[in-house]
Amino acid sequence: MSKFNLINIDTSFESYQQLINLYHENKDRQFETIEISFQQWFAANLSSALGGVLDKLLENLNTIRFSYISPDIRAIMQKNDFLSHFGYQKVNDIYNTTIRYQKLKPSDGRFFHRYVLKELLERPELPAMSSALKKKIAESIYEIFINAQLHSESNFIYMCGQFFPAKHTIEFTITDTGIGFRNRVNSRFERDLSSVQAIKWAMIDGHSTKQGISGGIGLAILTEFVSINKGKIQIISDDGFYQLDTDGVQTRLFSGSFPGTIINMEFKTDDTTSYLLTSETESDEPF
Amino acid sequence: MQEIIISVFNIVGSSFCVDADDGQKVYNLIKKALYEGKKIKLSFQNVEILTSAFLNTAIGQLYRDFSEGKIKGSLSVENMLPEDKALLKRVTATAKLYYQDPERMQTSINDILGEE
Figure (cartoon, rainbow over the protein chains, first blue to last red):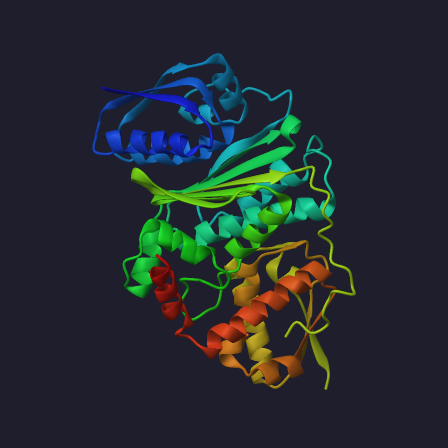
């Protein structure tokens, strides 16, 4: 039996490193029991990343047990449905600040649409936002889901979010356990980019690994929107960490690799920018 | 010549036009009509959300098969929100660049490697 403590998991580089450590310390185990304790804090939206890691460990027929979950963490992870995947009872979210944990096959596009509608767009308790802002947030999330669907070669795509009404923020995380940016770019172009170089390359408008068809707009759209919205993007892929926020771009390397890609998005809900284009700025000729 | 109206909403079967595979269905119809020399009006009535991935397959890849002049002269859109039209314009601009210079992606890798 192995034991692992997840301590104060938020969206910091160090927290992602702990999730990578959880994977690396246990990835070679088979038919064993892995006990995990949750201490202090666990950011609900990172249930998405944890779900991906735990599924990788379950592939080797290990048994996952949560030996300790602090009452606060337990409450929120029951409300967002994560713990119901691991033998716990579902609990209603009376404050309605959770965005449910969901794991979907890449081909489950229609379920994803329903999920976004139910969990995000049609939620009456969603902070007051212009419909254009809501649409920009939904589009960003779709672009990232579709990227994972097209490029990750993952068996599942994991998603989860959280509203923070006092901070006027929505955090939403999409995780896959596929090949990652580095392998994808390097195998397409037969090169040897580092994980950070591969992420930086993919963030540039029009850069795509697709063959015979243009693309590479989705991440650029997300970058532009998040910059105006004063939000944040974090990409954790392989051993690369990339973060874009109001302080600019920061990149770092992890010790060990995440088995896939995590994309964490933070959106500001009190953004008063008008995202509606007027007919004056609209070109009549899109071709 | 009579214009053929293609309802994107009906082809996809949803107001959420986000999947690349759904874009492919739209592309197949447009391609067939363009090969037959027809004029097409693409209707986005009742479409609520579009992604670049959908538009890349639905429209972007037409620039591989047809000249810009042919597409401009044969294809038009209606009932498209200004912000969606802006996204479409971006998709077509990216497609034109891509098919003009297919080696561009390879050279862009050198640029990233040269940065560090």
